[in-house]
Image 1: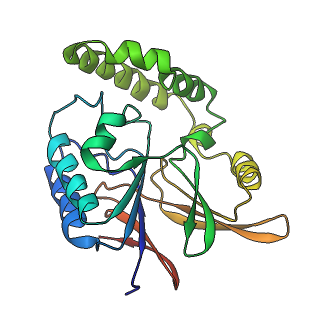
Image 2 (image 1 turned 60 degrees about the vertical axis):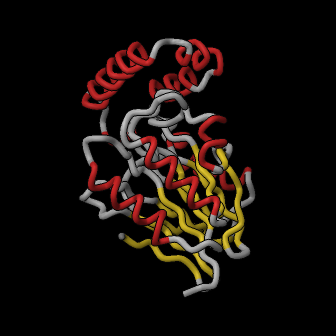
Image 3 (image 1 turned 180 degrees about the horizontal axis):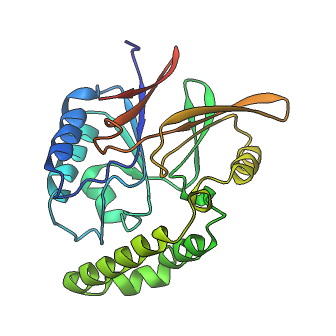
Length: 243
């Protein structure tokens, strides 16, 4: 095993309805990562995060495990996903994790790589992009976070129900990654490696880009069908594994 490794995962979607996945994730934090390792969580760690005062299960035990990991030396960077975009500075302070801009360029064993949750590439789904811009607006977030938690839960449930109904009316290709957008983003950031989640279909894609081979790695989710996908990157290369 490499003396240092970088782990990347996304779409864990921790919630009270799936305590078994919560236990697997906590075990991964406590026993699967060494003090010298780095972990990037590329969005949707939580299935629903309604503010840093959202103490519903499993938020508190997960924050405690994250804090213990960072205290023993693990470097943890987290991107917002479309389910937990309200993670804020109090969460950072309580866990020792760093909330990173989406997208961000990181170093993976000497390789420049772009990491992102991935929903920014679903540009064919114009209604979703409008919704994304709306809920990421700082003014909207301040107004929403000022509501009592019971009202936030009620409003979030209404939005989730409307989103599920909207998905049923959309053809699959509309909600998929737009490859032209991916190519433009890789050229803009001058990278030949990209890692993202969101679409829940783990795979490695290679394609030529300005005379070089570009690699796009898609992370899976932590539902049973994908078997808890983790990308492990070390000096000898990378491997997309399940735990």
